[in-house]
Length: 329
Image (cartoon, rainbow, N blue to C red; front, side, top):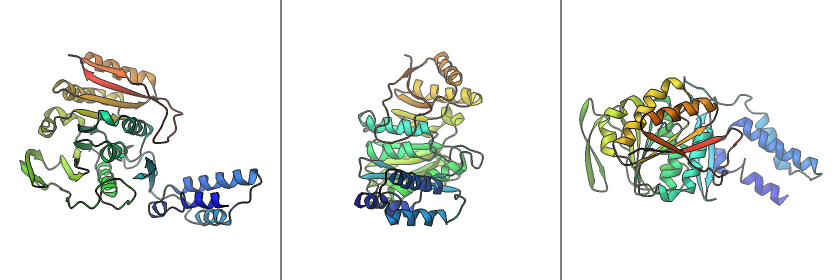
């Protein structure tokens, strides 16, 4: 009975789960599986398990439009992600955390030495899972999230603030730092000054590009509205001069390949950096076509060895691949 009580207190009845509830159908399936296994093995079931299950079952029968997912890092740090309950919402798939993002996040957490003290730019950040894992755990010098869909950018900023401002008390970070978020209000192109601990830097930018900026764990964290087609002409990307580019689940639509490959080419040929691309292999021919296109642009994609999930736990029913992409000099 004690084990069942501890299980309940650390899952469905955990304060973090109560405050930021996962999908209702997931909670019900979890409890039903536990109860069924206990009954099958002739074990007495803790009454509280039945009470919580019935309470959830008698609640709303339709999941809300959004829910939360909690990812435990090092058994002491938890990253909380708000996401859509539908795979496609508001005309985009970017409001959910997909398998490739978990694959990339898990790989990054296992290879922190490659990211420590690096300037990092992520393309297609989505809900922000990969970036939060890296920026809160791997100690980069800066981490810039980016996306372009308004709804995705809004949820992305919300998830960042949830995890770095102490709303989620289980996350690693300097949640009590007196560093304000900067939201740009400049109109047109002008010089914008950002201040952090007495240090001031000025950069030519457009108000539509930089949406959020904050210091956390001595690293700059920011959000960019960055469509791939503007990367070759972005003054801010030039100023940022990223050393590492991260991207997950971008290779799925053949019509986007030309602009995506051009963005890769500009980022990798203009500076000394490396790009790590995580892909879920839904269609082998589509993925191969993109890799071949990169080769025509003097970019080399080398497949990295992927170990089974070791920090984050996720389904691997659909195969995933991770590529290190670099310019051929």
